[in-house]
Image 1 (cartoon, helix red, strand yellow):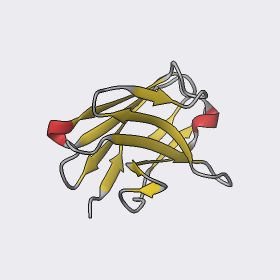
Image 2 (tube, one colour; image 1 turned 30 degrees about the vertical axis):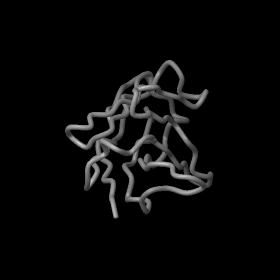
Image 3 (cartoon, one colour; image 1 turned 180 degrees about the vertical axis):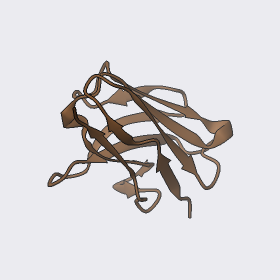
Image 4 (tube, helix red, strand yellow; image 1 turned 90 degrees about the vertical axis):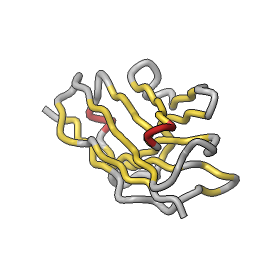
Amino acid sequence: QVQFVESGGGLVQPGGSLRLSCVASTSIFSINTMGWYRQAPGKQRELVATIIIGGYTNYANSVKGRFAISRDNAKNTVYLQMNSLKPEDTAVYYCNAPRGFGYLASWGQGTQVTVSS
């Protein structure tokens, strides 16, 4: 079963930037849709962004214009470039591949993003 390992989180001031990486244990070449998700304390996990094989992307309204998702199939990696970060972006960020009513993989450890002055 494929596993995803997220990295790149950290503490950043409001207005700052971070780039998250998600490395898959197997090839993602044939995985149609990859997504980034986040879960803030006391809240449900939510979808942040998705990217399909053809490169089409989709974003949650709260991050449109600030975040950018990309994928490098040759490196089995999906990225999330986050700019103009806000305190409300504070959360644990995860990646996964939606499939039907579930997901391709079990949820990993995620990577913590904290936006604070």
